[in-house]
Length: 146
Image (cartoon, rainbow, N blue to C red; front, top):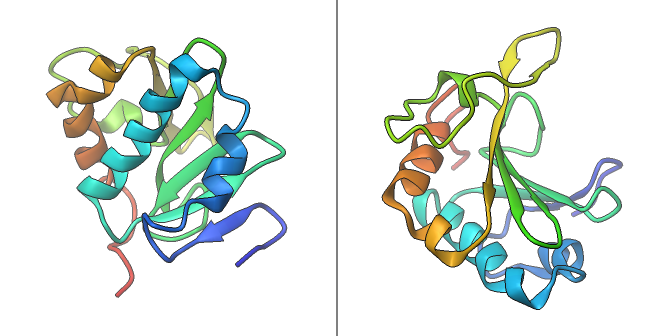
């Protein structure tokens, strides 16, 4: 399903056509970490709704398609790293200190956005990365649609 903002995937992990379009130009070094981030998001929350914005080269994940009210995380691929961002990152428990202590504010200052750079598969596999994604699915977003 498509809307003006992006391509909505509410069919689950197996539907990766729009994701593949966003990440098509990612370097071969970053292909595996990019895929691993997506796999981890769907492993943490199988009901994730994915929205891909091919023109913006970004992907958002949430309990619904709305960027600031239903999404908990986003991905932006670059040549040598992937940015994994959290819309409410400043509110997440981060005992390992992966996220910066300050970050951007959006939507009238209501979101405390934070992001981290993923440069390798090992970065994705850290238990702290999984913990951040898990916490983000429960912070300020509605429960998954059933």
